[in-house]
Image (cartoon, rainbow, N blue to C red):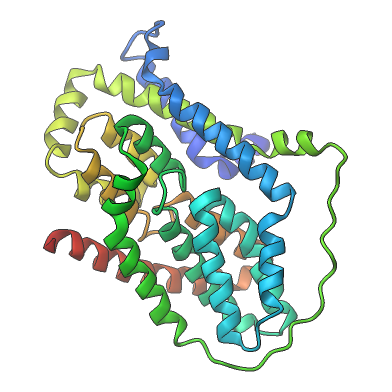
Length: 333
């Protein structure tokens, strides 16, 4: 039982998704039609992207780039700027989750080396926001956008232009907060050269794929497919969601995160643009609004448990401010 609870804590979204999918099976008789619920294009694309990302991670491509950039840094403001915007740019190509998995530990180590632990909370907060902003640039930047890209067939250009105003405002928001970082002189210590381990390379790549995320998607597709076939829920969700996609994208993301929100909304509405906007700006706000938010929090809490409360406060305040700004832009324009 203890192992089961530990697994539930570690893979909460997956566990809840499976439980809900199983419950829904009691209302819609299991059949071969279940396979038609699943958007296999999304599953395959996500798997390919995760394999590619694991290859880059095992080659330490982005870590090498960051270390090279760090050699040019002379003060704390420059350091935090690089650490924040490397998350922005990397999340465009390797997803927001992976970007934070790679660079939050690197950030904690870098700030520890220069004896500036006081900057960890604000830096990791801004990194998380930056990763959630960067993943808006391309539809391959986050799982929720991969879902919407495959179901909507919106082009890369249209996707980018749709979210461009929100990206620009968010980048300005990040830049404004970075101005408050002090410009104290620092000297970064020399770091060991990054080695490349050839042994079991592809084994490590395949082992690094988040198979539980893929299974979570499958469970959610089954759940939404069954809900669509239950008259009560189909009529209820259609009545609530149609015409209110942005609001429901934002609200539902705060409680179930934007990946399940994307699958839920896309099952009841074809207003793809509104759903894309809602789930992307909905990734800001609460700690569970985006899986990336939880990743940063877990990494920080593991290293410095005493920072948890202060981090949660700073993170929530900044995210709610940005969410309010972005939602206001949507309402006005």
